[in-house]
Length: 220
Image (cartoon, rainbow, N blue to C red; front, side, top):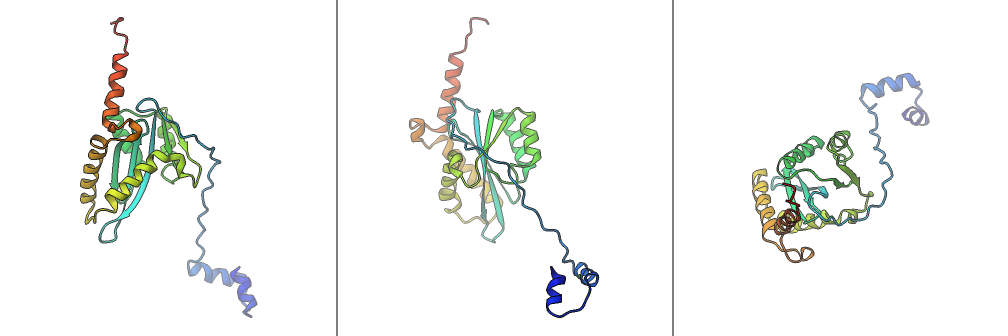
């Protein structure tokens, strides 16, 4: 293209010379092709009947007072809207997502299904391999359809309004401190209308208690 443009301007250089100068100026950088996503089927927003059936994961972006960007990795259990973790850092690649899931595996177990959008961390081979190894179904929403992941989008809205927009953060340590306080309040103190005005923690404990009370002890 550059060669023909120069010829139209009256230059008589041949294509070899043009290419030699072109490469010497390091203009021959390959364009990064956009990764083509597979077709995503419309997913019904399933209402789980027990903990660890469906988790939702999403990212949020913000910046410190000095302009440095940071990200939040939010994971919730759709059953009781409990915020399982909010990880804050400047970079949260797919391997970091896997590390956080491994930490939750030790304390909470892993879900049957994880619902995500089509971000690069979620469509990576590494996360797909991890989910296959742990028998987790990875469900992708349709691009541009955040309502298909409405539970975590609602949670993100609360984090944005009550945390990110409410404070000026000087450092990541401040972000992590405030995040921890907010998560504790959200899970243990805030009643949710959708949970019959119980808190997420109360709903979780009630579900575990009911499960244990229905256990058949006669065979022991």
